[in-house]
Length: 555
Image 1: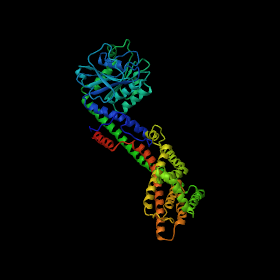
Image 2: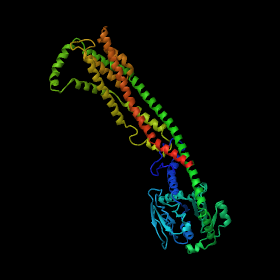
Image 3: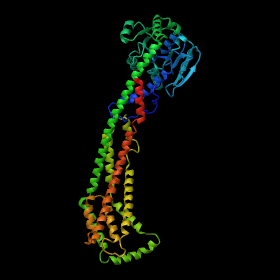
Image 4: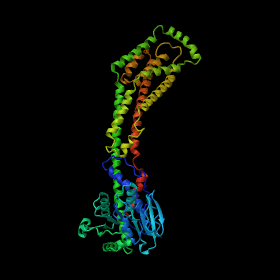
């Protein structure tokens, strides 16, 4: 077979659960790895596995012992008696080598024991013999398929996967029970060679009734035997009929043909199931592409809505606030501006000399004051709206779907504190960029120039005003307010007009940078949601390996 290893544990074939067939995918990815592991294991052993299967108290151990003619598996009236499976096999067959089910311990027991081997939970007990006529057989006494212990039910399921043939044990009390009946339907659907033993049958059940009940499966009514022993049960006429049928069905002469037929059927069934899994995964992939498109639409729509809100929020009230700021700026440049500046410089000189106050610190304080007045809550509200929209529109309805849980894991949805920290970081970067831009532009302003737009304080005032407009919203007012602010300082000279255009260019670039930074918050949130989806698909190598395995099964 293809060397691709189909993992048995964990989530070997992840999927998001976007389609209505997600339940079928879950079942296939859970069972297929173990089915393929069992098939590969059996290919390396010249054996027919015949599994004795049934519900609680149906007498699996008793019938196996009678078939073998000695106590192999411990039997009794206490139920359940078999706590772990017992495998009866020729001493020359290493069934424990590369046993396909991780976590299952396999131990060998040589010789015989008076009461047989009981078996331990989670352990396969291998009892060896020297019968050459049964060298090709592994006879398996399984735990009850309807056991109250989950590990026993799981072990019975694993051993059923190894079965080339089945002896199905039931009784008048158990034949209609749901779990054993479900296994019986599987035996028929998969075409496994089998026989039905209706054990402990009394006069209430006639052979004709039993035949009609299980038709077309061969059925053998075995009466209750007291006291029970392999010798007494083996002497019953109906049991002798069962033994003869068993030898004809699973004997050495039938072995080569039966092994080839069972192997062919198993390959075909596994190929169909694997093909179905790949088909369903492709459908999930198509649904995932549509999911991502909807995610992008939601992200674009809500972030653009926020941009529109920031562009226009505040209206006339915002415009009046900015005009008051402009009037404050005008008052700084009246006829007494020069004397006031001299006085201010005299007062602040000692602080600057000692490093207590600096121009840079003043600018930082100005930035801080502007940011203190700005309400950032609309940004968080928009992010929260996006998160809720994703959970309402893009989360699978089935709470068992892997994507349902993944979208709700801690850290996937950004918390308010994180959003606010990112907004502040964007504003910090904007302030740093603005300061650096100011230093570059102000280098060309003559120190002696006291009026006009060349004045560095006017230039800085224009930058601060632009900063406040950008982070505070009302971006549609940018041109009008900026023009109003600079108008008193612009003459008809071409140099002043050039500088005005430069200031306007800086303001527009600042707007672009800030909008891009806020957009990045939405893109990060969208990326987190998308990573949840991407993490729930098998990688290209896994899919390629499954495709190769499918071709090998079909060959």
